[in-house]
Image (cartoon, rainbow, N blue to C red; front, side):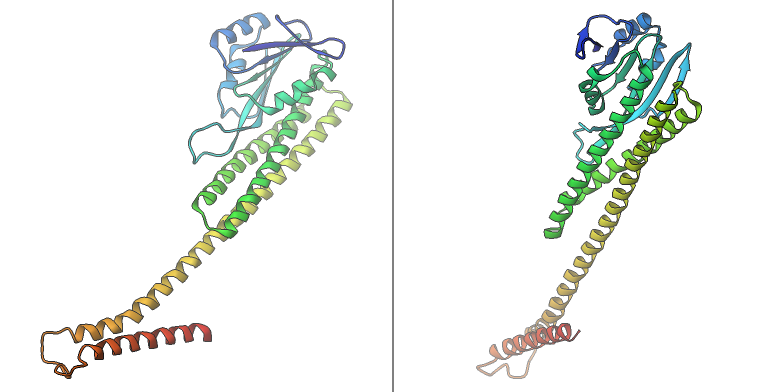
Amino acid sequence: MIQYFKNQDQRTIEIHAPEPGAWVNVLPPLKQEEFQQLSDNLEIPLDFLSDSLDIDERSRYEIDDNVRLIVIKTPAENNSFNDSDAFYITIPICIILTHNQIVTVNSFDNGAIKKFFNSFQNRKPDNRKLMVLKIFEKVVVNFMDFLKEINHRRNLLEQKLYDSNSNDDLLELVRIQKSLVYFVTALRSNELLMMKLERTNFLGLNEEERDYLNDLIVDNSQALEMANIYTNILSSTLDAFASIISNNQNVVLKRLTYVTIALQIPVLVASIYGMNVPLPGQESHYAFYIPVFLSVSLGLWLGWYFVRQKISR
């Protein structure tokens, strides 16, 4: 689906055809014939449009016949039906600067473009360079929001794990860890992209715009540091819970060993008196009660002994 927008009297208006200074937004579902039509109408290389279909496309920039392409990664919720997949993934946004328009291509619906759309009425479409920086800003803000949500979700799961060692909660922590791996990789790639844009001045920014880009690099570095911190905390948490589970397992096995040993002596007594051979006291009226008494006595003594040993430690 292709949308065309322009600003008129501080209002965002959707139009039916591209105009000079318009914003062209391509959303899923994406059709090859729409790509071809857009490529012909705006003189955009077809591969610039199709690059957004590759979810693993890295952050980069490219120029072809004075048409500039910038690919930046942004977070999105993972709609996969597989319970072992990450809660959040990163997807590419393709920003294309044509001769007269700015084009954004999204393979998934994402929050960064929605935030940009909500503030589009305050933009100047003729200043396409600043619009690119504003999209960068929304991407960084989107990462920050997702990281805060991830941290809140992690805290809730950790609190639940303190009360019960549930496998489901541990698996959800692993899914959060996978999400953070996506985020760290994307943020690092975005940081390199912005630094290269600043160094090469690919967009032809003036001094004020370069300062703004530098601020965005700092904000992106902060998001990257947050993602790294949360990743380290989560890794330490998972290691700690793994040690706790292993320790609890050892305690259970130790108790089972005590019970097994305590039962072995009474079983031995009962086995001896169950032999089909002449035994002392077998003619007595108390022949049944004697092995029962010995078995119970020895079992209680061994139980008391193990409890005493545990207390003394």
